[in-house]
Image 1: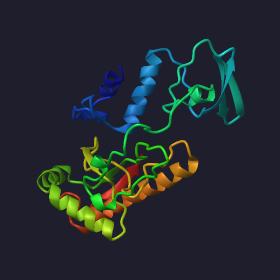
Image 2: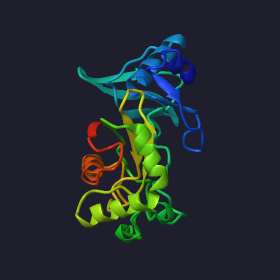
Image 3: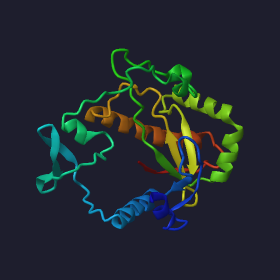
Image 4: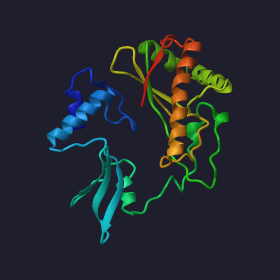
Length: 247
C-alpha cells in the first residue's frame, strides 16, 4: 500500500531504484513525498493520526498493558485501549510496560569485515565488556551534482576513491566506514548513505541521549567533510557539490 501511495504522487515523488537485500522495494523516493504518502495511506485505512506525542510511560494491570502516557505540548495525556501496537521503532512501549529485552548483539563479534573495507587501519576496537550495536548513522544528500558523471567515475575508480578517503582520514577529516550513493528525485541531487564515522565506537548506545548527540555531531561532520573531500579532489561530477540536507 505504501509503494502504491508513493507512486501515485507522480515522478517528482520517486523513481525506479535498486532491488537487493537492502533496497528491496525497487524505488528511490523524496522524503517529503514519502511522508505525504504515509498520511494518505493512513487516511485510507481510517487511522486518526496525532504527531508530536512521544510515549514516555506505560501502565500495566494484572500483567496486561492497559494505558500509555503521552507527552504533548499541553502536558501529560493518558490513553487507554484494548489493543496497543508498539510502532516506536525501539520497543519503547514494550520496555515501559516491563517486557524483557536485550541490548546489542551479545553473541556476535563486531562486523569489522564491513567497517574495514575502506580504511582498515582506522577502526577502533569496541570495548569487550560492552554490548555491540549497529552504528548510529546520519544519511545526507548533496546538491550541485552531475550524478551520471560521478557514477561513471566511481564505478571505474574504486581503488582511487579509497585512497582519497585514506588521505582525508589522515588529515583529520571525518570519513565514514563506507558510502552508498543514489540519484535523488530532483536534478543534481544525490543521496548518500554511510556507515558512520570510522572512529565512532560500536558501543555507542541509541538509548542514551549523550551518545545520540555525539553520533549526530559526528554524522554532521561526515556530511560536511565529504563535500570538502569531493571538491578538493575534483572528483568528476562533484567539483561544485554542496550539502543539501541531513536526515
